[in-house]
Structure formats: structure tokens, C-alpha cells
Image 1 (cartoon, rainbow, N blue to C red):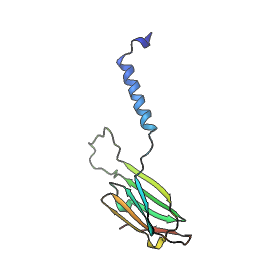
Image 2 (image 1 turned 90 degrees about the vertical axis):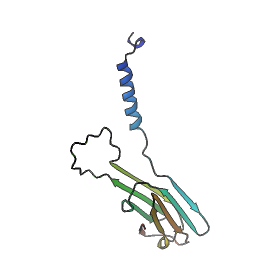
Image 3 (image 1 turned 90 degrees about the horizontal axis):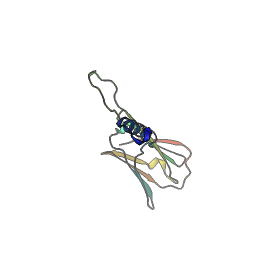
Image 4 (image 1 turned 60 degrees about the horizontal axis):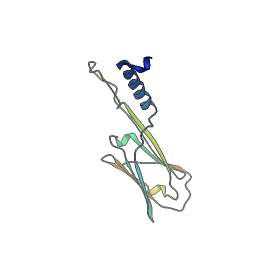
Length: 137
């Protein structure tokens, strides 16, 4: 009989638990990426707004391009009177990997400007066997 006359408290708890479980099962967001191929090279473009280039690591190893980043919010705060109702900008990280074959790793160039990462990978027919870290301009 209690189901015939729901109280506002019942709606409150239902909404509370629905929101909690919806956010728990939501997948982490990954940056959008475009990979273009032409006769001489591949070009990778990735949107990574809000990151510093020092937080981004790009490597190419055995035909695998890896782009990863870790951004930590500064936790040191002298203002102890701040009370956050919701804080979502504490930490953001991602790791994306793409198989891109026949790349001359010595010619790879990478640039990060205005929140967009551009990677130029010239084509080569040699098989890659070593790891190479790519500097970001």
C-alpha cells in the first residue's frame, strides 16, 4: 500500500542513487584525435585543452604511437576557508595508443599550441626496433 502514495522523500532518495550510479558507470573521456595519411607521412591531431606541454609524453616504439598526459591540480592551498561543494578538476590523465607502421622515427615532429597537439610522422620502409622519446615544441 505504501507504493500507492509515494512521499517526496522516496523521490529524493531515488534521484540521489540514480545520479550516484550514473556517474559511477560513466566512461572516462578521451581526447578526440584525427589521423591523416598521405603519400609521404601521417599527421596526428589531438585536442588536449588545458594541458601544459610538460604534462604530455609522446613516444613511438615498434610501430606504436603512444600519447599520454597527467595533469594534477595543485593541492597546496593557504586559504583554509574555501569550502568546495563539488570539485572535479583535481586530476586528469589519459593514454592513447595507435598502430602506425613504416615511420621514420628520427623525422617525427611534435608541436603543442592552443590546446592542440600536432604530430608529423614521415613514412619509411624500415622496421623500427628501438624506443624514441619525442620532444614537444
